[in-house]
Image (cartoon, rainbow, N blue to C red; front, side):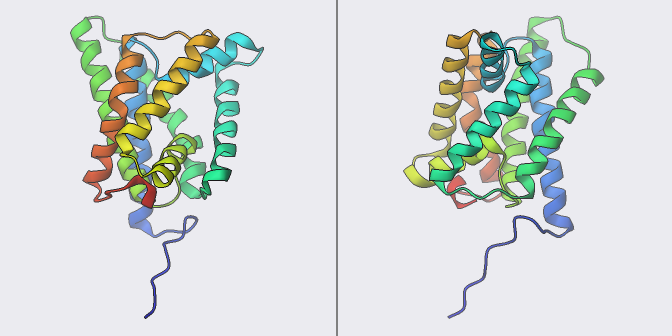
Length: 207
C-alpha cells in the first residue's frame, strides 16, 4: 500500500501560497491592533523590551535574537522550517507597521478594548490560516506545534503556557506589561485553537 508524501514546505501552488499570505496578513493586522489598543504589548514584545533593558540591543534586534534562540529550541523537538518560517519573519513586522500607520489610535477605553480583543482574535485566525498551509511555522508557532506534538496537550494549554512564560521572563528582565498583555497571554491559546479548527486542523502537532 503506497503512502502519500507530505506536501513540500518550500514549494507550493497558488492555493497554499494564498492561504499563507492571508494568514500572515491577518496575524500582522492583529498584532498591529494590539499595539494600537495601547493596553499592554504582547508577551513576546514584553520579553524583547526586557532584553533591551538588560543589554545595548534595540527592541527589534532583541526580537531577532529571541527568534534565533527559539529556533534553537526546535532542534530537540525535531521541528522542520519552511517557506512559512521565513515569510513569518519578513511579512508580519511589515504588516504591523502598516497597520499602526494606517489606523488612528483610539482614545476611548471601550474602543481600545475592542481593538485588543479583535487583535487577539485575528492573530489566532491568522495562525490557523498560515499554519494550515503546511509551509512551516514561524519561530514561536513552531515551538508551540513541537511541544504540542511531543506532550499531546491541547494547543490552547501549550500556547498559553508559552505566552505566560515569555511574559513572566520579560517582566522580570524589565519589560513593560499591562492588562492587555495578560489578556493576550490568556486568550491567544484558545484563539489559535479556534483558527486551526476553522482550517480543519485538529492537532497543531500534525503541522
